[in-house]
Structure formats: structure tokens, C-alpha cells
Length: 366
Image 1 (tube, rainbow, N blue to C red):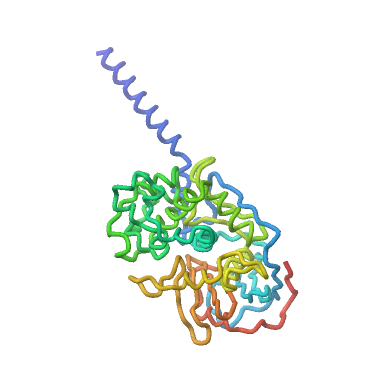
Image 2 (spheres, helix red, strand yellow):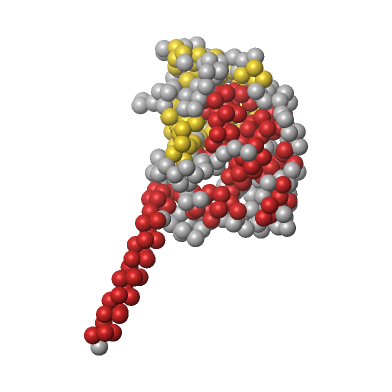
């Protein structure tokens, strides 16, 4: 009897030790998963765990913004930061108490908007990069239907990958793994395809993460370094902070990039000026027009950005996430960034056609 008790005690100790080991090894996942679960609007204010700095550069477009009162077009919305400007760098800003032009903003889903211009940079030397099948870069997908997916289909949200239900506390969920780690690439490689590539429209967070994975394999360098060298250091003035899946791992491409509000606006102004920053042509001329070409399956969906039309604005590229909206009007060479809570103002697009308002306060020259 005593021997049986000892054996049972040893067994229980082994089980407890294994459980403790598993819990400890996945502790970073559980911390982030709880933050996602507890977030009031579905997006944590910050995510715990490892991060990586993306350095800005010295060639950013100078911005001269007048601080003004909240425009009537956005009345009724919970607005924290509102910036609107022309491609010459002149425009206006509304800043709620506690916010400045240098406030670092988690772009949430706006992070995916960096992928289209990044691929524009890659297309300058590899014009066919948007239409190569994924099997060119992922050898294990060569005999897999997923290997037929192209970067263009990923940007059109036509990969055939479902978004799936977000269950942040389920460690077996691929979507939870994509939100909290510990390995973004593994989550991508194991995402199941439901529809043939090019046949079904569904916005899925795996699409931008796969785009990042393909870009880094095409270029032969980590996505973080590629994004910094090819794009962020070219357009942004300040450093940004990206979330890593694990120390020295991969950054999130689908979300969670904290950057100065001015640099999010600069992204919009880059696209508003046909890929130019001042006199410098950063993206191939005409690439922004390619971004505005409708998906063959879902009209109104361009490459990463939605495409809309409003009276007097021409085509408008629209990037939206919870509490965030970036509008770009290439025909007018203007862009608008809204940061707030809840849905964006329905009339925000009116600021695209507005002349630069007279100053209602100090001139915020950056």
C-alpha cells in the first residue's frame, strides 16, 4: 500500500512538473492572450513581450501643420488625433487634450498598409513579384494548393484562407498564435485553406503575415530589416516599435506597430503623391494606380487598401482598423489620418477636398 502511495505521489509530481514547464514555456503567449481577451474594444493599448525598433530616417517629408479646432465633418465622433495635409507637407491638425503630434500611435490594422508600398519597392527590380506563386518561396507548398497563392491575391484578400473565429485564450488556435505568438511563421504555414486561391474574398489576418514572409524570402533578409531599409527609414522621421513573436523572432506584419501619428500621415502622403517624397520617387511611377485596381471578385477592394469614390475626390484609397482610418486621394494629392475610439466619422472624406484652414492656434512645424 505504501509503495502504491509513493508511486502515485511520484506520478503526480511528474504531471505537475510537466504542466508547470509547459505553462512557463508558453507564459509570454498567455500574457498577451489575456491582454487580447480583456481589451475593451478588441485591441490592447500595448502588448507585453519582446519588441523591435524600426528606425526612421532623415529624408522624411517635412510637415507644417496648423493646430485647429475640431472640424464639423467629424463632430460626434470620439476623436483623439486628426491630421490632414497635402503632398507639399502643409495641412492641419486637431489634437485632443493629452495628445501631441509626436504621440506614438498603435496603428492596429494600419500596419498591413505598409506591405503594398513595400512590394512596390520590390517591384522596381522584380516586376513580376506580385504574380509569382507562393511555392516559389515556400518549398513545402510546391505540391500544395496553397502554393498557387500570389502576393497580388493576398493583397486582394483572395488567398482562400478564412479569418476564423478569434479565441485569444485557445493556444491551439492559429489565429490566437498569430496574435500572441510564439511563432508567427509557423502559424502561417499551418493555416488551412478553405477556398481555391483567387475565388473567395475574405479579410484574414494571415494574409499580411504571409505577404511579409514571402517578401523576406524574396529579398533574402528578415522582414523587419527589409521594411526598415526599404520603406520606414525612407518615409518616416521617427522610430517605430514593432511586436515580435519571440525574442529575436519575427515582427507582426498584420498589426501592432506603434509609430508617431505624423509618420502614419506620411504613409498616406507618399501614396497621395504617386510614390514620391518631395522630388524623390520612392515607388515606381504608376504603382499607386495599380493599388487602386479593383479585385476581380470583390469590387471596391484594391491592393491591401479599399477603394472608394466621393464627389470631387476621384478614387480614394482607404485603410481602416478599429479606431483608426487613413484616407488617400491621389487625384488631389491629399491624405487624412483619424485616430479615435469607435467607428470613424462618416464625413471624414470631406477633409480631403478642404483647403488648408486658417490657423486656430500655434503652428506645429515638425
